[in-house]
Amino acid sequence: GESVGLHLPTLSVQEGDNSIINCAYSNSASDYFIWYKQESGKGPQFIIDIRSNMDKRQGQRVTVLLNKTVKHLSLQIAATQPGDSAVYFCAENMRGAGSYQLTFGKGTKLSVIP
Amino acid sequence: EAGVTQSPTHLIKTRGQQATLRCSPISGHTSVYWYQQALGLGLQFLLWYDEGEERNRGNFPPRFSGRQFPNYSSELNVNALELEDSALYLCASSPGQYNSPLHFGNGTRLTVT
Image 1 (spheres, helix red, strand yellow):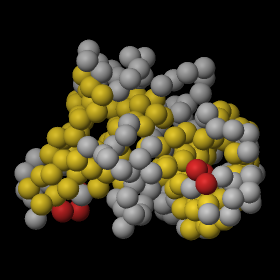
Image 2: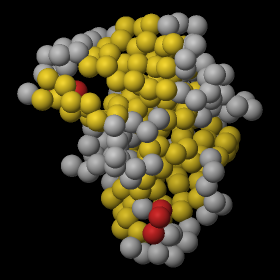
Image 3: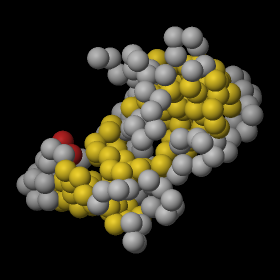
Image 4: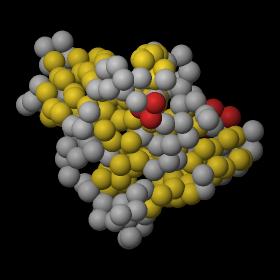
């Protein structure tokens, strides 16, 4: 399959273990954050989002943690499966002059070892 | 519910030519966004259309343009193609509400030779 990026940070995890993917965001005024998963040859797929008035949100097998003090976002995947292998992007909404445009991080490649 | 659809999936052009990429949003979504994903550079915001109007554009030259039709589908045009325009072009849609996630299509892979 095609690569979505070169020289990406890579996280290798044993199947069944938990994964933690980290993201540092840039703008202290950002108020909305999203995690996306991108598999080879596909577009980014929405995983979970969180607003700045929360510090934790849980989905199915995933948890997002937001630390506004240090501008840090993390995605935790429980019981990682081979199908979780993909590139994961965090995105922040840097609300400017009335426009809505997401700014994406560089991505982290997750490789699950069977 | 059908997702965001993009066509063509692959497009090969030569330098100096024009490329036209198409996108159909999720039914009920009025906003369409275009992103460029070049190898190693992540997703770069290109254009945002809502209700037929261009609402914002990223830091790209004017030869990148587009439009949104009354049925909310959209077209991205790239004129005077350059080699560095080779990338995956992603379209996303949203219902136009603030703080709602974008839903992406699988992209058009544009190769400029």
